[in-house]
Image (cartoon, rainbow, N blue to C red; front, side):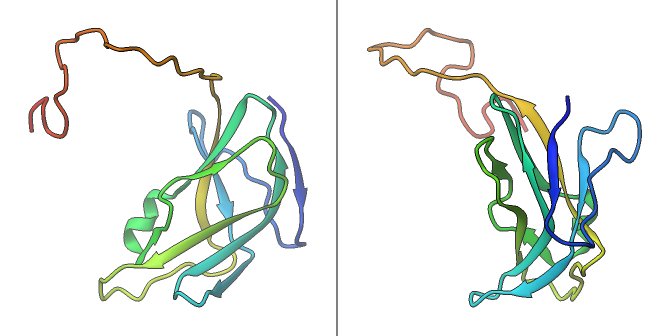
Length: 141
Protein backbone atom coordinates (compact mmCIF):
# COMPACT_ATOMS: atom_id res chain seq x y z
CA UNK A 1 0.00 0.00 0.00
CA UNK A 2 1.31 3.45 -0.85
CA UNK A 3 0.58 6.42 1.42
CA UNK A 4 1.22 9.98 0.29
CA UNK A 5 3.41 11.86 2.76
CA UNK A 6 4.48 15.50 2.84
CA UNK A 7 7.51 16.99 4.58
CA UNK A 8 6.50 20.16 6.43
CA UNK A 9 10.03 20.71 7.75
CA UNK A 10 13.38 20.25 6.01
CA UNK A 11 14.66 17.96 8.80
CA UNK A 12 11.62 15.65 8.67
CA UNK A 13 12.41 11.95 8.30
CA UNK A 14 10.16 9.75 6.15
CA UNK A 15 9.18 6.70 8.27
CA UNK A 16 10.47 3.29 7.20
CA UNK A 17 10.52 -0.21 8.63
CA UNK A 18 13.74 -0.86 10.56
CA UNK A 19 13.68 -4.66 10.15
CA UNK A 20 11.72 -7.27 8.17
CA UNK A 21 8.56 -8.21 10.03
CA UNK A 22 8.24 -4.89 11.91
CA UNK A 23 4.67 -3.64 12.27
CA UNK A 24 5.52 -0.04 13.12
CA UNK A 25 7.63 2.59 11.42
CA UNK A 26 9.58 5.04 13.58
CA UNK A 27 8.72 8.73 13.67
CA UNK A 28 11.44 11.28 14.40
CA UNK A 29 11.17 14.61 16.23
CA UNK A 30 12.15 17.76 14.36
CA UNK A 31 11.35 20.11 17.25
CA UNK A 32 10.40 20.08 20.92
CA UNK A 33 8.44 22.58 23.02
CA UNK A 34 6.63 22.71 26.36
CA UNK A 35 2.98 23.72 26.67
CA UNK A 36 1.36 25.64 29.54
CA UNK A 37 0.41 22.36 31.29
CA UNK A 38 4.00 21.11 31.42
CA UNK A 39 3.56 18.64 28.56
CA UNK A 40 6.35 18.24 26.05
CA UNK A 41 5.24 18.53 22.43
CA UNK A 42 7.23 16.88 19.64
CA UNK A 43 6.67 17.84 16.02
CA UNK A 44 7.52 15.30 13.32
CA UNK A 45 7.36 17.76 10.43
CA UNK A 46 5.21 15.24 8.51
CA UNK A 47 1.65 15.14 7.23
CA UNK A 48 0.19 12.15 5.43
CA UNK A 49 -2.79 11.07 3.38
CA UNK A 50 -4.00 7.87 4.98
CA UNK A 51 -6.41 6.14 2.56
CA UNK A 52 -10.11 5.96 3.40
CA UNK A 53 -10.89 2.75 5.28
CA UNK A 54 -7.53 2.89 7.10
CA UNK A 55 -6.35 4.50 10.32
CA UNK A 56 -2.89 5.50 11.51
CA UNK A 57 -2.18 4.55 15.11
CA UNK A 58 0.76 6.23 16.84
CA UNK A 59 2.44 4.66 19.85
CA UNK A 60 5.52 5.40 21.94
CA UNK A 61 8.55 3.28 21.06
CA UNK A 62 9.52 0.51 23.48
CA UNK A 63 12.62 2.56 24.38
CA UNK A 64 10.21 5.03 25.98
CA UNK A 65 10.51 2.87 29.11
CA UNK A 66 13.92 4.50 29.62
CA UNK A 67 12.42 7.99 29.48
CA UNK A 68 10.56 10.10 32.03
CA UNK A 69 7.56 10.42 29.68
CA UNK A 70 4.26 8.87 28.75
CA UNK A 71 2.10 9.65 25.72
CA UNK A 72 -0.86 11.66 27.02
CA UNK A 73 -3.51 9.87 24.97
CA UNK A 74 -1.57 6.56 25.11
CA UNK A 75 -2.47 5.76 21.48
CA UNK A 76 -2.92 8.47 18.88
CA UNK A 77 -5.58 7.97 16.23
CA UNK A 78 -4.87 9.56 12.85
CA UNK A 79 -8.07 9.45 10.80
CA UNK A 80 -7.99 9.22 7.00
CA UNK A 81 -9.43 12.73 6.63
CA UNK A 82 -6.70 14.40 8.73
CA UNK A 83 -4.06 16.30 6.75
CA UNK A 84 -2.24 18.11 9.56
CA UNK A 85 1.13 17.46 11.13
CA UNK A 86 1.71 14.29 13.16
CA UNK A 87 2.48 15.53 16.67
CA UNK A 88 3.23 13.66 19.90
CA UNK A 89 2.32 15.09 23.30
CA UNK A 90 4.05 13.50 26.27
CA UNK A 91 3.66 14.18 30.00
CA UNK A 92 6.46 13.80 32.53
CA UNK A 93 6.10 10.92 34.97
CA UNK A 94 6.82 11.21 38.68
CA UNK A 95 10.11 9.34 38.44
CA UNK A 96 13.46 10.94 39.11
CA UNK A 97 14.79 10.05 35.66
CA UNK A 98 15.27 13.36 33.80
CA UNK A 99 15.48 11.70 30.36
CA UNK A 100 13.34 13.10 27.54
CA UNK A 101 13.60 13.00 23.76
CA UNK A 102 15.30 15.73 21.73
CA UNK A 103 14.98 16.82 18.09
CA UNK A 104 16.53 14.12 15.91
CA UNK A 105 15.43 11.32 18.26
CA UNK A 106 12.96 8.66 17.19
CA UNK A 107 9.99 9.42 19.45
CA UNK A 108 7.27 7.01 18.41
CA UNK A 109 5.97 4.72 15.76
CA UNK A 110 3.03 4.56 13.40
CA UNK A 111 1.06 1.53 12.28
CA UNK A 112 -1.50 1.91 9.49
CA UNK A 113 -4.36 -0.60 9.59
CA UNK A 114 -7.69 -1.18 7.85
CA UNK A 115 -10.81 -0.89 9.95
CA UNK A 116 -14.42 -2.00 9.40
CA UNK A 117 -17.33 0.41 9.20
CA UNK A 118 -19.51 -0.54 12.17
CA UNK A 119 -23.23 -0.03 12.59
CA UNK A 120 -24.58 -0.65 16.06
CA UNK A 121 -27.94 -2.39 16.39
CA UNK A 122 -29.71 -2.06 19.72
CA UNK A 123 -31.09 -5.34 21.09
CA UNK A 124 -32.83 -6.31 24.32
CA UNK A 125 -30.51 -9.28 25.02
CA UNK A 126 -26.98 -10.35 24.06
CA UNK A 127 -25.95 -13.93 23.34
CA UNK A 128 -24.43 -15.92 26.21
CA UNK A 129 -20.72 -16.81 26.26
CA UNK A 130 -18.46 -18.80 28.59
CA UNK A 131 -16.95 -15.56 29.92
CA UNK A 132 -20.26 -13.75 30.27
CA UNK A 133 -19.94 -10.50 32.27
CA UNK A 134 -16.51 -11.41 33.68
CA UNK A 135 -14.34 -8.30 33.59
CA UNK A 136 -10.93 -7.35 34.93
CA UNK A 137 -8.97 -10.43 35.99
CA UNK A 138 -11.85 -12.81 35.30
CA UNK A 139 -9.70 -15.12 33.17
CA UNK A 140 -7.01 -15.60 35.84
CA UNK A 141 -3.91 -13.79 37.01
